[in-house]
Structure formats: structure tokens, C-alpha cells
Image 1: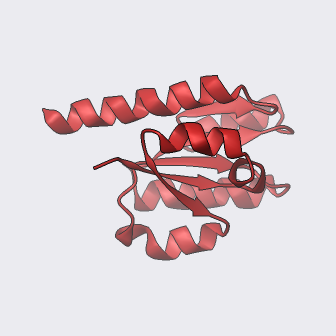
Image 2: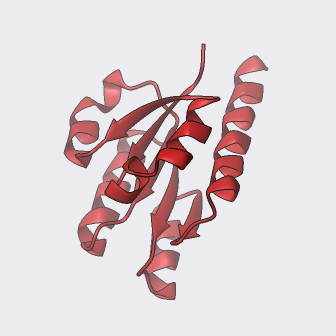
Image 3: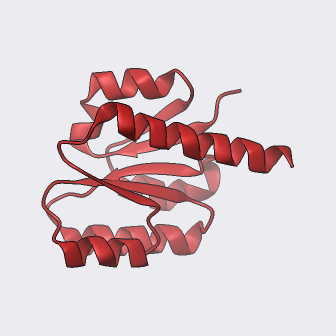
Length: 126
């Protein structure tokens, strides 16, 4: 059974090459609405969220903090093109695992995802 990852954000959801590469090693749950995730977190078996920031940094940061509080096991990779250095630091302090600036390198992002999936697979095998 493939591990599940969640993908949130219009550019990520519309990136067919990214999704095709990720789907080789994981089942992908596309989340157009982050509120769905917040309401159904206990039903979701994913340990990895790829999250694209919208134009509302403070709201997105609050959502990430709420998700990490409700699911400390959840690894979050963030994609964005307009965050300042201080905003990136705040995102890391909120518990994100990694940050990729747009335009992101698809192969590098997929490699990072696969590395995290391998880590969780090895952790589960122990």
C-alpha cells in the first residue's frame, strides 16, 4: 500500500508533471480547501502535507499552527513565491519541515517528498 500525501494550493494541484512524479510512490489527496483538512484530520492517514501559501500569510500561518497542534506528526513542506525572510522564519518556527520558493524545482521537491516518505517507512518498520 502506498503512503498518502496531501497537496494544497492551486499551482501545485495544476502542476501535472509534479503530480505524476509524486503519484509513482504515493497516493495523493488534493485539497482545494484547507478547512476540509482541519475538519477531517482524524480521518486522514497522511503524514505529509505539501502546502502552497496563498496571498494571506497570517491566515495560512494560523492554519499551519492549528494543523501542527492537532497533528504533531504531520510533516509540512511549504511552497511560495512572495514570503519575506522573516515570514519564512516564522513558518519554520510554526513547525514546517522545509520551504521551496517558486518557481520550485519539481525534481528536487519530489526527491524531498520521497526522502520524507522513506524516513516514515523506515520509522514504521522499526
